[in-house]
Length: 109
Image (cartoon, rainbow, N blue to C red; front, side, top):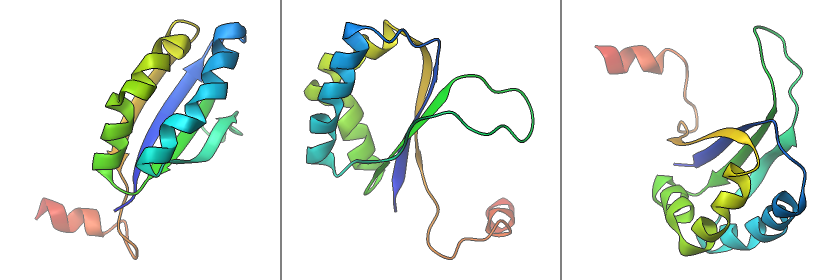
């Protein structure tokens, strides 16, 4: 099942360190099958408060997403982002093909 790494970035300081991070992140994704779905997009806010940008990276599964985040390659550049922005990052599983919102109710029963 596809898994996702999602980052919510706020107050990004677009400096040499962030540029270095951007230049180096793609190579860290390759061994784990990661690919950007959304990168630095500012959403059109339809409800509620929102500030900042969103990044979504897809991986073949949760093990690949965790492997990427914990990899020496990504860990080597992580501080370039965290030291130059306020951000939150999460990893989570997606849903299988054909999933319906009511499938969630079946898990509760």
